[in-house]
Length: 349
Ligand code: SF4
Image 1 (cartoon, rainbow, N blue to C red):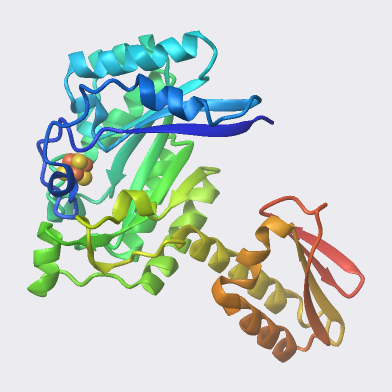
Image 2 (cartoon, helix red, strand yellow; image 1 turned 90 degrees about the vertical axis):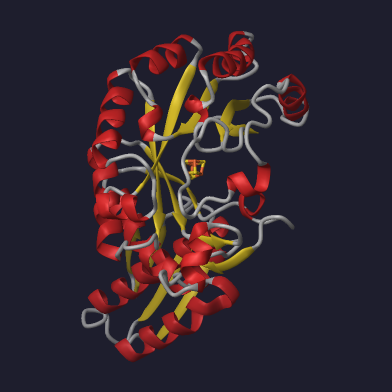
């Protein structure tokens, strides 16, 4: 399989007339900057750093790309599409709001080589959308997903953890709905409270309790399992530092961690290993227990600052295994674990 390279083109806030309580894009960038810029130098510059043999994708990010106006949108897409036609780029992706999708827009996207559409779904509970002043409904999201699927685009769902009035159950429900609505990809964003946002004022006045990093990891892990049940490819967990932090863009509170995705995947690995220990302990009492992983996954298995290691060791010894070891083996597929209980082996995907 070819390696993938992404050329991100950030179109900040433009076209968005909403005031989602958690959003600080207006504060950072002001309005209406950037969508009339010439994106050729950005694309050329990025292409010059990508070696041959990669599948290259141009990705318009920023939240509401299809709301920036037909003229600006088609100009940007026409530029990107030239690169697709020349064979230098293989696909075009964009992200937008559910209520900025209709047949006219999808016709334009289809005719200009767009392949992937990511929707800022955030929650499938109306009371959460209302509490966040999202300005669209759950049925807007359902309709947009239906249309995107009917047109044959690859649908992605972006959702948030720890929004005002949202519970862990609401988030699992949202993940379940994202699967049922036909998404093939997803991003999970634990809620970060930025300065100069309404959410920040709500937190300062006690009208919103920000979630901690630990709570975000626990809740994102549950959502991760639900999305995986629907065979959804999870593209990202947590904001990229470039998306979230700058001098103008300070974090007041909430679930910001530069390696949020790694923390969640590490929790998933830990829970998988602990559940194998408790399932097999009686059968293999007194025998050694070994976990093998690809070397790319070792840091996730042992955990951030080796936090998983001691937990796994104690659990294995308390459960009656004679010894516990964690080894790397390049024959083990990435994201898989191989467990050895005495002489018996088992693969965990
Ligand atoms: S729709 Fe997106 S860009 Fe607009 S205010 Fe909400 S989060 Fe910000």
